[in-house]
Image: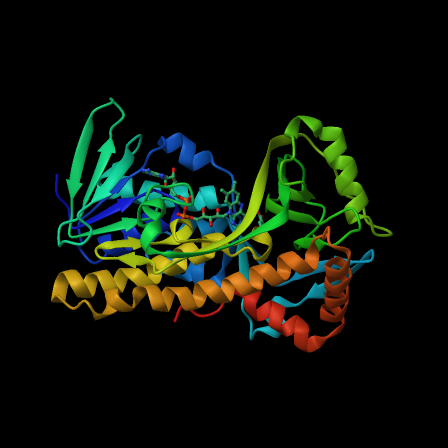
Length: 388
Ligand code: FAD
Ligand code: DHB
């Protein structure tokens, strides 16, 4: 089998890249190990930067995000039982964020690809990649019926997330930068109207809590927990009690409801440099992971492919490889900016087991909420920097 660009992974990065290349008449095949149902139901991120929504719009797949996504102009930081608003739009010349679940983005992209009749092979797990130092890299994959096959392409893009095959394959030739955090998030999706109009990031002595949402009837909440947290130790009552404690402020109530989903997300920072090895390019979580506190993971994945797509077009249409050569360096500038911001937000908002670090970060947060300059800096980074 042959195509121009083989894309491994039907997450936001792989599917968006497929769409951007479709609009340029470049042939692609997307190989995805999971089923369509699985990728469309997987609950993950929820905050889209304005630039992400604009890009989805330009690609003709942003209609539902525009219609159903919730536009937010601010977020709240809570410290010492007091709430402080970061006026995102006022501090950034009118920029916004849109609350729209990652799985909805995935549904929209899958629907568009299916409608275009383009190859999107679910249940097909890429098992190995070869010949990346030639003009015809190959991906081997096992199909849903157990058969194996091979896809030959002009370029391969590893958009297969953090647990995919692409990064481990090139890891020996990469420099991998990593940082683990001494905590994780226990996240829930609950069938209850959000108790807040804007996201609340709360620092509490018992640990961080985040109140987000998905719709007027569905809330998404997170609690700082231990890295090896056992979900069985967290019956619904305990989760709500802990959320009540961490969000408590006078005169405000957190409404409770049935918990639809719960899970523990570990926190890491990882960057693999470079994001290109011959004719294999890494995009999204395959190349880097950020801790979720800055809401950057999904936005970075889409920014990578926004940077990558025109460079692929230059190479395949005009034989110009300057853009591909420069892809990694360009994408990594943005990735490291997001690493810094995500690390800053994570450190500042969480209870740290190191008492010195904990007090230092508490002091930093108290400064941030008191300073117009610091709030503006948070706002600029939170709404997202340009793609450049
Ligand atoms: P992914 O979405 O991971 O997509 C990769 C795809 O590749 C998957 O569909 C996978 O099934 C497929 N795949 C993997 N291996 C193979 C293979 N060998 N062959 C074929 N296909 C393969 N970010 C935030 O900003 N906020 C959050 O709250 C948040 N929560 C998260 C919770 C969890 C549990 C996880 C794992 C991530 C979370 N993130 C969050 C991060 C965010 O969801 C990711 O940054 C985003 O999904 C990256 O998109 P991607 O397309 O690069 O990778
Ligand atoms: C959500 C996730 C985040 O990591 C974040 O910083 C804000 C919101 C969410 O899932 O809604």
